Length: 237
Ligand SMILES: [Zn+2]
Image 1 (cartoon, rainbow, N blue to C red):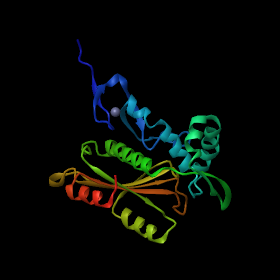
Image 2: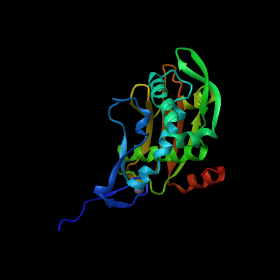
Image 3: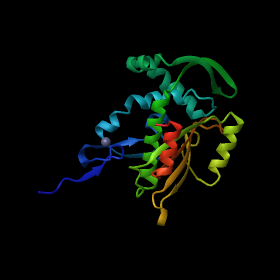
Image 4: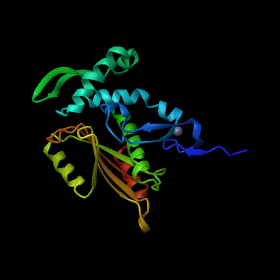
């Protein structure tokens, strides 16, 4: 009898029969307008994939309210966020506690007072660890992140200090994107020779407009003990 084919889940790192494996998109598929080519995914087991289902929709709802005149962002807000909150009572219930009213940039200088959903900090950490692992699986398949610690930072690009740090960080990194104004990312991973699997630096920018406004995050990861010790000192999870 033929031995069943096995694949490794990129999240729990366990091996499963290939028949039960799924494509897990990270960043989530739902942040892209239809027709965006080559969305990034990695192979995940069913339970890992499903565990992020609500987070994906909440993350999209939250992203679609950031200050940016990205056309794709507006499309997602009009066609997905508004209707999902009307339809899905559970999703609505989940985020009701985090709803507030704020200025939302609708694009072209048009500002409206609309409900904004906050995205909880602990889930931001989980979401960005997942996105980075998916990107690593796609672009650096030999990189072993199983023992890495991840440091995630929110870059507020409207603040001059953050904007300066952003330009400094991305300068030596490689740029790539999926959709012109949906997901732009910069990567720099050390994965060769004597320092194999040392560390990675990522900058992830969602719904950027012509002024590079959007939701921006930095991720640094390493399995180096000194890095882990510093993370613990900073109180990061
Ligand atoms: Zn899994």
